[in-house]
Every structure is written in structure tokens, then in C-alpha cells.
Image (cartoon, rainbow, N blue to C red; front, side):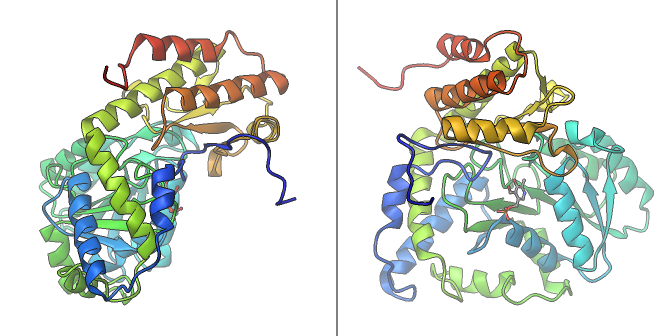
Length: 401
Ligand code: PLP
């Protein structure tokens, strides 16, 4: 019954889309304006400039009215030619989907990783990328594609290490990075880290609803696009960059989402990106304190790579994670992320990204704890108490005076 509204707020605890701040929802309700009129150009120029600060780049950022998957496709079709070899790394479900896309586009992707679901608990091993590139003496590999924050597992890979691996091998391949769930949650530096195409999306750290996506470019990526031969029209960077010079798009852009983007960029700037990253790191640690107290396993097996964005909670043998999730949704109006692909039914995911604070994290953890007990999962001690302890012992006052 779609008319039934359970009292109180729905807690959107999935790792994206993340909760949309009311301020953004209000901005989206402004009347749609003429996308070729004078007001629009000012909005376009403002968001393009603001985005460069979030991607940490001096080079263009292309904005698409699509979900993140479209921006994955744009990155590949603008830079590569039919049959090109691409090196990808299996960190989880999203890396696997990008790999499948490369196959469907007629590329020859090679998928490095560990057998079975083992790799879904670890990050990118840059040493293996270096070894593979050293063996490619003819430079047949045209691009290395990795996912920064693997949203299906809660593992954040070390991107500067991948850059160093490519450089150590003296290899000219492009570096493409998916930051769909890390941008504006975790420190990321497109220019400084030597990334050629950064792919991202609106519905995670940027706090917008789904519907816009991004390619941040490097001069090397732009040069590659001049000779790349995969077919592209709608995704082509050339016409978009030409229109963007004056703040416009060659087609009808997603005007109302751009209002929200403008607002989100102001919010991020006001908080300060280092504070945004520290807030995510602290909420992530509080969430993991809860999982440890429950006596359950964290999906990420490498503490150096714990994600500040989400935590994967592994269920004890014989417990269906989706049954627990479903019970929590019905009883407590809290949505949690399902296990995807190879880990379906084995774990669920708690999102702590975007417009989240101490009390929203506690709501998620408290809902999980009650749901685990109701589902008959034995927990060692209160994770909610452990998370509260961490939050009370860290952090600072939000208001002056
Ligand atoms: N890559 C990552 C890391 C993601 O988390 C997602 C979506 O959750 C995608 C790609 C796909 O993006 P979309 O679902 O917006 O097309």
C-alpha cells in the first residue's frame, strides 16, 4: 500500500543513494529554467568550477545526466579503440560490472584478482599491476581501471600505489578510477595522483539523488580521445566541452539536479573537505566498533583499507543476511544494503556516507542490533554501546558558544 506512511523518518542506511539534505530537496523544487538562457550559463559555470575543487583538478570535469554506469561507459568509449587491452582488478561486484561492460564494448579486459570470493575482502594489489605491466613490453595494454571504494564490500584501495606501480613499470597506460562511492567521502586528488579519467556519481558523497555522473579528465586522456575509435556520440567529450566553455550543454541538461549540485558544493565548501573526510572516517570507526562488539566479522579483511563510506557485516554460517535485512526494514523502517554478487546472502552493508552524523549512525547500528537479536543471531555484547562510546570519546562540538 503506497499510501501507508509509517510514522517518523525512513532511515536510508544503504551505501548510496545516501540521505538527501532538505536544503538540496528544496533547491530541486525551484522552477526549471531555460537551459539556453542567460541565467543557466551562470549556474553551469558555477557548478563546473565547484566540481573541479572536489575532484582536486585544474582540468575539465564532464557532467552527464545519467547514473554512474553511464560515466563508466563514457570513460571507456572516449579513450579506447575496438579490441584494446585493458587491465582491471576484481575487488568486488562493481569492479566486475565495469569489467563486463568492457567486454560488451568489444575491449579485451584482463581481470586480475584472487580466486573465488577471496578478492572481495581485499583491495587492489598494486604489485601485481606493476608485474603485469612490466611483462607487457609491447605496451598493448591501453588502460588500467580500478575502483577506489568498492561499494559491494567496503574496501578502499590505495590509488597513489597504483599510480606508482604504473610509473615503476615505465608503462604509458591510462589510469581510470571509479570514485562513485568515494568522492566527497574519502580524500581523493585527481591531478596530484596522476589519474587520467575519474568516474563519479551524484548519489553518494555529493548527497544528491541519483541521476548525474562525472568524468574528470587529464590532458593525456583528452589527447587519447582524439584518436580513440570506439563509437560514441551522446557520451563524446568533444561537444560537451565545447558547450561547457560558456556554461551550457549540447543537449537538455538535468537542470533541477544541477540546482541541488550547486547547493551541495556550497555545503561541502562550508564544512571543508578535510572535515568531511574526518567525519566519514570517525563514523566508519564507530560502525566497526559496533560490529566488533557484536562479535561479527567485517567483510574487509585488511584494516588499512577499511572503508570510511560503508561497513560490510558478515553473517555467521547458516544465517541469511537478506532475511535479517528484511526483518529490520519491516520492524524499524531502516534500509540496509544487500549483499551483491558473490557475497549475496552472506553479508549486509551499513552505509555511513554523505549527510550523516553521530545520531544517524546510532540509529543504523541500533536498528541492526535489535534486528540481529530478533533474527536469533547471537551477539557478544552491545554494538550500539560500543559505537556510542567511540562517538562520545571522539569528535568535537558542532556549535560555537
Ligand atoms: N561503481 C560503484 C563503486 C558504485 O557504488 C556504483 C553504484 O552503486 C556504480 C559503479 C554504478 O553506478 P550507478 O548505479 O549509479 O549506475
